[in-house]
Image 1 (cartoon, rainbow, N blue to C red):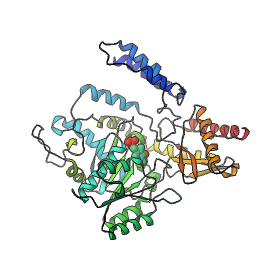
Image 2: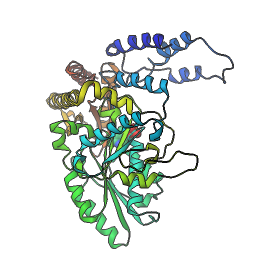
Image 3: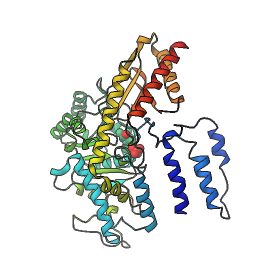
Image 4: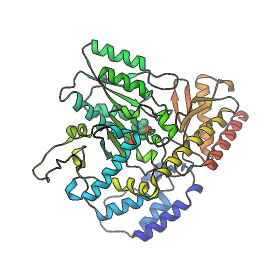
Length: 461
Ligand SMILES: *Cc1c(COP(=O)(O)O)cnc(C)c1O
């Protein structure tokens, strides 16, 4: 089984650069054609593999392509797939330390490396937990802040974030038991960063109205336009007002491996908790997020619980029972899929790859800015920027938005680069996020060619 699957995988991965970026049409019919009742008898493995690789995988967004510049890419290192094969095949239980101490230590190493990357080296007891993604990490952060600051009574507590924060922050607040009126959405400046003066004003107003300001959720690389909040100002304000600071760095956090990234992310190391997404900035396949915590004991105190049928949990702070740090008891061995590629390549390889993404984004930004009537709406703070055809093209308002939507459609129609759009206060914009380890200068050149082509087509029509 493994050999046959490997043959298919090798063929698939080798042909990735040539595969289209997205399939078009007939998707509902495809989904319908797959419906079936519970199969009573088995089917042939070869046939099942064929269905997967020939019929279903090609009919999707090609998220592993070097041309995938949509949403937040990552690419999906194959090393992690091999690691998962091993983890799942041996099926060890890594959630409690005594059940697999060596493997638990590997996972704990990964968490500690994440702490090192964000600059928690000076903190006395840093730690964290690998989760399924950034959304879960944001949820755990809010629960941890709530437990640490408020305990059980949090009906007057207030969470502050910006209008550019990822929607998972609002979702997390809801799941953590906060009412919508307990979340203050603060406006942003012309660079889409949280307005720190407005933030301070809101905190002061809430405090004088006898509400209880609890935490600030800042962004280090928004999904919308890649904006990085002024983390030094936010953490300084939080310290002054005694609030918890969580930084959602799901997209931007791993740029702290690079010198330029550290500059942009200055202040990150002062946060109480930080969300990272190895399935973005470490190029892993989907399913791995990480919450790092300046004082890991806060995480444990917010989540730990005893049960008679469980083995005793570790008292020694060095030995971690992952089930004590989050909501999950049984879970996959997430550590190995991060550990294997880092051990095989070293941090250096990741640093260089991330540096390359910064260069690619900045070069593409310059080329696009030089095209007629083009407007850079969001500069690349890291590797994500947004542009549009500006009012110089003779249109405005809804007509201008429609024009840019058409531009996006033509670019994506070429099937060599896949970009997505979003709305900002100026209107609809096209965003480019460079984060796949497979994306290099040749592919960015194709994007630029396709943008030029699309502009020409629009002028003619
Ligand atoms: C991707 C992202 C999230 C959500 O993470 P998932 O891994 O998709 O759950 C949250 N915040 C930001 C800034 C992101 O980029």
